[in-house]
Image (cartoon, rainbow, N blue to C red; front, side):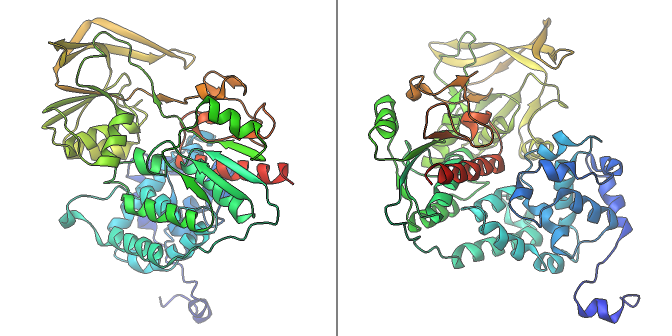
Length: 490
């Protein structure tokens, strides 16, 4: 520190520039793509999180990483990246921004000064996030690398982060929000991230909000979609309870069918309705044997695991699918006692839609990853699953990028299995809307600026509008809808 001026040290702005940090980053998975960043700012413009907290600016984080500066708030904001991939999709230079964010998290594990620079800004950024979303601890927890089960392998860096998160969870209090005199009532259908965000925002604005949730627990994907080993459910429950304590009424075991929807929109009790039902319907495999005993869909499997704990699976489990839900299902099957878990998917290893680090973590736990295979039929005897027949997939997408698999019928694979878990996608359940609201290709049509549907006073957002998306995108959709509903109600 001898070459740093006294005034700079006194201001606490000492920036430890370390060129070796940049070179270490270049050597990590897709880290070398950082060389092509020329600070256009497109990643920040596309980032949903940057709309919420100013400290999170992907282009600034990349600039500081190149310089090796790691002890100011902007330099460790990468910890809040939830890998929604919007930054990477928008980059004109092809920089793998979200993968670089993950590489920065991995580099932090071995940084002997990590504790010092973490304490220098993480809690401030967390406090800023808590002002903008109703579940900052749940969001932050899953944005980090999933916790490792064995304590002996757990590192001090992430232990410190979790300590900060749990301390913040214990010390934060929510006060009831006074309602406006004669405030309009708003009905929210669905208690997932989008629905709860909208309810929280509207409650803060003084409206009376009632949330209708079909499951026995509120929280949506946070409660029943993300495995408990990645996000402890007591954290979600605590943050949901805080939303309740503000004055939001959350009614569980309350599915909204056609009759209920008609009542919510027609009887004049509610001035507006926000539809945030997500995408809870698994897509069907539609091959021979898909109705055999032992065939499960990943959404139901994860939901039951999160609500009831480990469930019975066979010794040999096959998971069909290559996305994040498939990876979660495979890792969860191991925790339910499976001796062998094999994951097979259409996509090649490079095309698999799940994040690279999640694939590596699953493989490290014992999941066999076998890409480029299409399921042909599920085999069985006496009504029970005995295996799956696969065909080699030569190509998933055509030259125009459209889904158009090309199979090599001469190359087949037969896999023994007594449990098959399918994870090939999910879709919204919109029958309750009774065609009163315009839809297109299975999702609700809305004004992209206001989130209002074709039915006056009815708004929608989240996966039932965008298709399956990330947690942060659902949060932003809920915030946008809440602002529009507030304007609509005057």
